[in-house]
Image 1: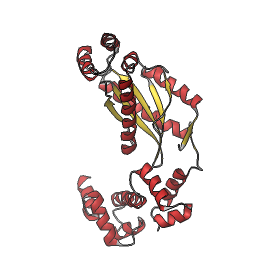
Image 2: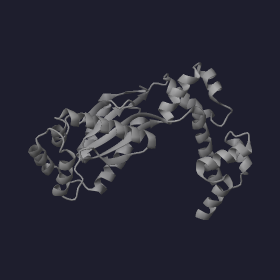
Image 3: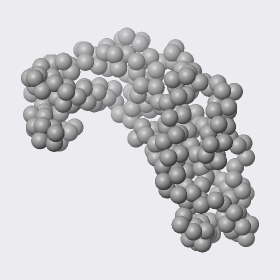
Image 4: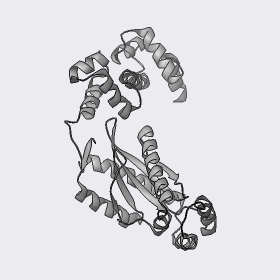
Length: 282
């Protein structure tokens, strides 16, 4: 676990979120474990659904899958859970490392109660639950519009940023993944590679790959190439006076031909055509 959390401050902020939106919000750590939520108790619909162990296990899988999706995309995503209720999740990030997640739900987002109940009843038909009680709970839920959910999702993203800025999420700088990420972010345009990183941090290649795969979804060399190409795209867009060979050099590519090959593989076009497309667009 990369982060520790000031739960007292977090609970206060989550309470404010609920008082404004009337939607329950939960925080997970980077291992998908629920740390705290406000209100503490889940909605009546969810209580009934989770009374079935099979459904409860499906809820846990649904949360974990949402966390994984948010970790890959690095942005908020809104979706319907396995039972037909709507949720939204956003990652807490520090640099390129995901250190936790905020999730709100479970809200009833349908045009009518009848439409929503028809879908929820179908999705929950295999669970051993009190179906009449679930129906009553669904018809008691307020109908939440998609626009309202979108607005609440934006607020949650602002909360996520605030958590990091105010250091309610306290990052332990001594943790190796964070140190590696900070080092790469500061030196990716220089002559760094797997052997030099292993030497700098006194770790083996296998361990470094495990850290890279867990946090970036790819190997270190690929991650460094991705960072360099993203910087190249920025320079091509913001500095039209720079020669493409200069862009390659500034981004850490000593071989111009290799740069153009990698750029085309990752973007689908050459650096020159990429720059030309930006001029045409604007």
